[in-house]
Length: 317
Image (cartoon, rainbow, N blue to C red; front, top):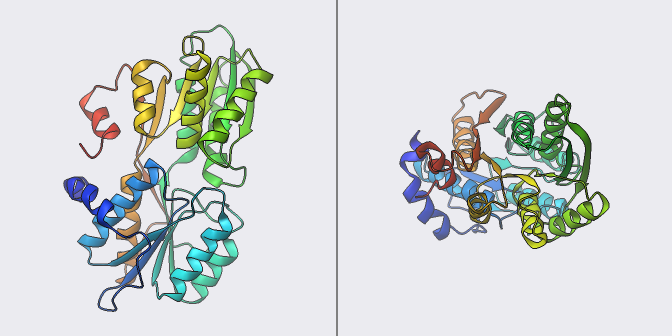
């Protein structure tokens, strides 16, 4: 894949790019990427992939998002700003499935092409949806949880906002798959919308309320960090099987040391790259499929040193 050949350039380009650039020069087609946030590793990889594609296709690109994955109002304003600045296409990941629907519809009415990556929005005007098959990712997380050696499985799920479509699909996939295991006695869910610190506190409260929990699952990057923080802080690594999402370096270290037992790693670089590439194709008059699924990989301590898994965990090395 061309994106992989340009990985080294992507890493440098990401850190040199101005995510809040001024309106681009008129000599190039202008595409805006509006993400759910700008702060975590997942979105940094998305931005890196987007930068590679923008350079390859000679597109003017701006990238921005709110400070956290709760502020859909700020995210909608960023979409409106991109439209006002002349964006011909917007690559978008919705914080709230319904709350951004009107903003996206208004952008389409003004002739802007919309491509969704990662997290969907409630609109039938999206040209293409690109990202993880979230239901399948939830099923993969459940299969990892089934590796628990305990006779009875008491499961705690720490999910993201109830209105975020990808988190809900992951939980549904997890619940449907885990229901096949007759050892499951309990599945309890809490939602952490603010970030890692809230996920930590919600996990600790969940363990206090249900002390028999022996499996913890975090369904995105920061919830995975929160549950692994709790396990480390409470000294529960030997008693609790932990499944987390994405390749944050702290979770990778905890996979190695034992606080995390499995990682479901998404290809966020590909989401960014394919999002911008798809925008280019639309602006050139091409057609796109309704859906493009990007890879997911289950990483455990048993396979984390395999060459292919190392490439997934450390995509910039």
